[in-house]
Length: 185
View 1 (cartoon, helix red, strand yellow):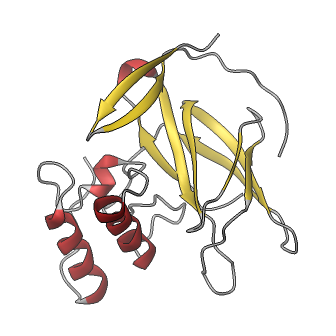
View 2 (cartoon, rainbow, N blue to C red; view 1 turned 180 degrees about the vertical axis):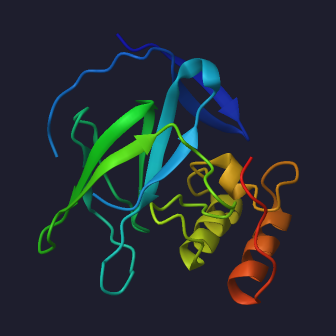
View 3 (cartoon, helix red, strand yellow; view 1 turned 90 degrees about the vertical axis):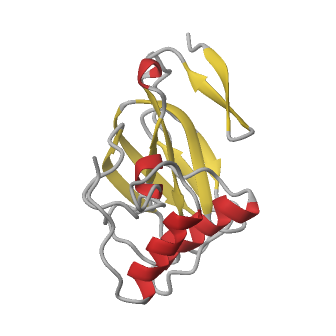
């Protein structure tokens, strides 16, 4: 049985899983992100943006399913999707939408957060820093968008918490040939 406890951070309510057991139901894709939950919970959130392969345009209303758990969600108007409280492990993620070829991402490791350099805010699997990371951080900071899946990646300058200075460093690096963000801890 999974037990949940309420955690309030940054005036937002999150439910944190307090057990490492989950139902395993095989069922049913795309760019992934991870957020480390508190260490005692051994659970991690998985989030990302579904994009059209040819243009990179975010896709709304895409069904995204984790095969090993049967958990499913639908991407929002900006292509964002979110799976809270996954037990740390390796998963297969499937995304599909009518008139699009479904995509499967195998061996998605959940529980590893910051990898390489900071700045991969949406935590896409390529670990690249691009305009979608800027959009994700702006959405979170000013529009009430989903929290960055990996706080260490979103703390782009490596100082304190997530703030406007992180956005400044990210924009400088992305568009002005500024210095690379510091390495992950």
